Amino acid sequence: MARRKILVAMMMHETNTFSPVPTPLASFRPLSGPAAVQEFQDTNTQLGGFLHVAKETGAEIVVPLAAGAHPSGYVERAAYEDMCEAIVGGIRNGCDAAFLALHGAMVAEHVDDGEGELLRRIRAVAPHLPLAVGFDFHAHMTAPMVDHATVLAGYRTYPHIDMGETAQRAARTLVRAMNGEVEPVMVWGWLPMMTSTLVHAPSRQPMKDVMDMAIGAESSGAVLNASVFGGFPHADIPHLSCSAVIVCDRQGDPGKVLLDQLLGLAWERRDSFLYRGEPLSSQIAHARSLGEGPILLVDHGDNTASGGTQDVMSVIEEVTRQGLEDVVAGPICDPPSIARILAAGTAASVTLSLGGKVDMPQVNLTGKPLSVTGKVARITEGEFVVTGPMATGTRVRMGRTAVLDTGAMEIVVSERRSEPFDLGVFTHCGIDPRRKRYVLIKSRQHFRAGFEPIARHIVLCDGEGVTSSDLQRFTYRNRRRPLYPFEADVQPAPRTRSGGPR
Image 1: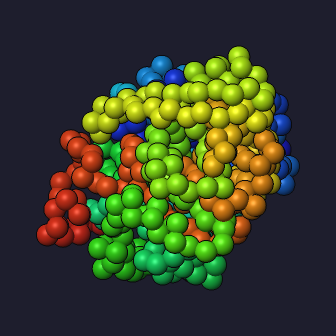
Image 2 (image 1 turned 30 degrees about the horizontal axis):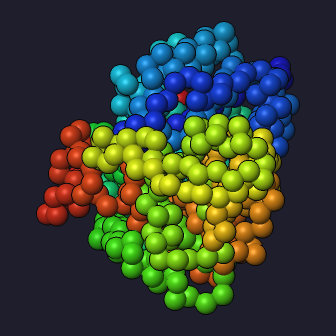
């Protein structure tokens, strides 16, 4: 048998359409060829998983693009077009199959279904190419995504500790199809409901039973792949929903039965997928009443991995007002403050207007800096390799980073945004969060990968920002109607089914 040529590519972005943070091409740090392979091989990422399967099959591997950006606002038109052309151009040059690491919630300035449009363009030049696609759990599934893929699979975890495994699941099914062992047929459906990212993690109810059912069907061999997608609520787009995709062998009847079961159970529990918060002052007061630390204070209103600016100071301000001590907080993304700190140098005392540099007009918030005085305890380059279970082996690049010690609080300040899902965000600059009473981080669920194992208590904090879980803060103009919970009497839409062996 002639050696196969497999194209492996990554184009990943979760777009918060309410975020003021721009998303140019530079945000994606695009790589290709050997540089991309070196960056991602043997990492717990989709690209790492796809590279692993391609190598174990002995294929020739080409990587025309490996590009991923932190969640932020609309992807700039030029950036989207450049990345699409790199991938489509690579396929146009010829290959026997393609493995694509996508997100499923990319929105560009001119395209509201970034992944579906990419796949449509691929099919225009390669109508019958075997194509495996990996998606994030927060994907918004659309007909073009399913119609133009041969096989697809989504993450089963949140925090996403199975990124590499997900890619391998999709790739191995495609390899079996190429070997003539199976003929993939996909069926899929969606529900007109929104789920909160704070309560839809597959490891806990109400999603756990739904995801466990999908995992069980795939593990037993009843279907080839089964994926459930919680969706991403901070996107004002027509295909906002909760969905599921089943990959079957040769005929879709088993998948249709499973699809109805999965979506039916999710719909029955729709009210349980909504987050109901509390006043921030009460949450911090509760944290003060708790015993021994570490006590995690989780500011989910301004987390990078959902598109936050990472410079909103509302939770730090309340923690300071209530007099909490022995706190480590951050990182706060504030390039001007970093410049001031670098000019002052280590051991210097500085007073800063920290954070609050970015206005958020989409949610009617104005940046509000907080005056902070402290000693510059440490300055670093802000780089470390992840050792925890999420994105293991990848390099985090926070830009130049400093520790500002106010006495009651050590604040990590960085040049770039980076959600703290790994202890390295603190340990790389000499802080052991396990020895702190309070650990204040801007996150939603990904913190659980690295920080939940060290926590004695976890307190969710309803801080301000464009990743708030209070849906009343957001004005949705482009969403589908009706959509639960905005229209409470909505009925499940007819479930779309699509697919067929390619």
